[in-house]
Amino acid sequence: MLYTITLEQVPAGYAEQCAEKDEQCKVVSGEFTSTENGQLFVSRLEGIATNILSKISGSPAIAVSTTNNLLAIIRKDKTAKTY
Image (cartoon, rainbow, N blue to C red; front, side, top):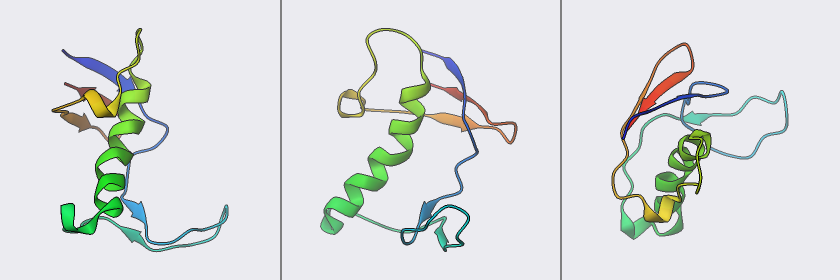
């Protein structure tokens, strides 16, 4: 099913460490993780997907835990087509 959503900002990656507002931090834009990384792996899988799924309007809400496949084509204008 196709949904068009609008994000607050285009995802750039994951913050390498916690940071306060307006504080600079390193951003991880690519990495290899697997089930051997435990909670880090799960948080990576669920992080962006949760953000995207929360933008899809409709009832009931789509849970990450019930999603087997997700494709999101994110544009520079902060809109995304999600399947």
